[in-house]
Amino acid sequence: MDHRAELFVALQRLLPKHALSRLIAKLAESKNQWLKNLLINRAIKTFDINMDEAISDDLSTYDSFNAFFTRELKPEVRPLDTGDNTLISPADGVISQAGKISKNKILQAKNVDYSLARLVGDSHQAKQYENGLFSTIYLSPKDYHRVHIPTDGQLLSTRYIPGELFSVNHQTAQMVPNLFARNERLVCEFKSEQLGHFSVIFVGAMLVAGIETIWSGMEKPGPGAVRENDFSEQNLCFSKGDEIGRFVFGSTVILLFPENAISLENNIQSLNPVKMGEKIGFSV
Image (cartoon, rainbow, N blue to C red; front, side, top):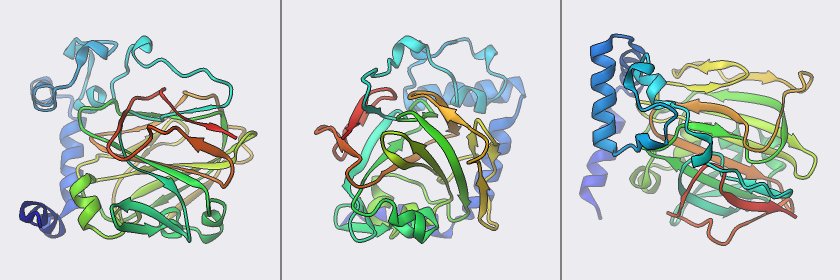
């Protein structure tokens, strides 16, 4: 038993996670030149961030730490797989888990699962993915933090679900029951000609200053009522690889696909790294 991991999780249970995240958000949004440069330089050194991939390695071009953390990359460093029926990774990160959705359960960690219906916040929507496939991608602080659509699709709806802000990593996945269904999240449902419905879920975490989409802007973290939005009449269509959102600091993206719609690549397994644009599967 890892006592350090137990202590790490126990401390998180005691900490005022929402208050800390709001404080970090204010610091991250500050345009004070000295402060934002200090935060950026510390992040680059601490997390070994590769600035050669960024469109700009000049810190003066970033007016806040948030602007740096959601920095744009040079297009050539994240080439998109262009196969007609392929699915791409929506983000840089590590595959936390991937596989089949069975009996309304998704695998969170070894011998730990959680409720699909609770994750998406709607039992009818959950039924669309019964016996389908999922992939969970963890973004660390060093990763590229923009999220892209894995295949062509039209946005149908979003559901913002308030909740906890536990840190999301291997330790908490092992030790916090229903982690992804407890943390704040934004469930984005899309429709594809090839796949039918599929979902991209942004999962918040401790110190994540907010989830932002290109259609609605920032979804501020914090307790409150579930917020649902219907976009089905707005014809918001995206091509594979288009940016759909971003979040500050590390967190997680979960993909959901219906039964008999896709097949995942053999290398899409737990703890394998992926890059945005890399092929992770294909429609069947």
